[in-house]
Length: 199
Image 1: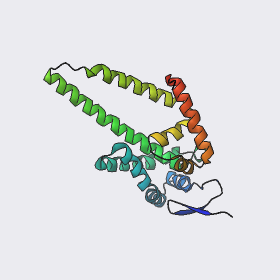
Image 2: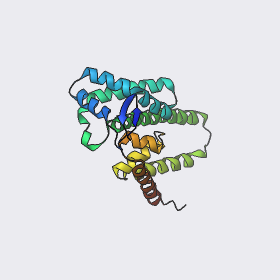
Image 3: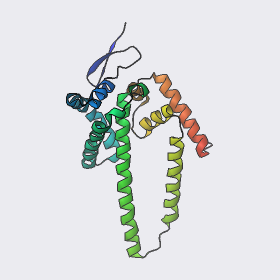
């Protein structure tokens, strides 16, 4: 007997595939549907805000980024392709990218302030080599993740940057849990190989 599953307040028959209501709303938004946009916002804003807040920690900045995300969704909904992925994942990817951009911007500003402060102190700092090494390593990781197949990159990004469990990722992207586990295992294996990690 099929059980009904409640996802974001919507009853969905548990048939192994999740109906993508967000994709339907995005298609309507792309056609200029303001009512669909309001429904999309009501449906996704809590989850999007939670993701942004996990990345940024700062509530005020998270609220700003939330507005930026939905402005981008409104302006670029026509670029969403329902046949290429789930609507939820598309919106959450925009949110994650915006949050990471804000972190990078804040970090760049803090780095500038630190450099100015250190220069004004005129004190030699042994941490420069360490900072350079960390940045180089960060770039290596980003390149390695970018080189992964899209489905593996999506699963790893949602898990490690978004903080989602494998079950939540399966529901978000509309794939079986076993498939998500395989994607993550294979993706992490490729990352280890790419980065030369032996353990």
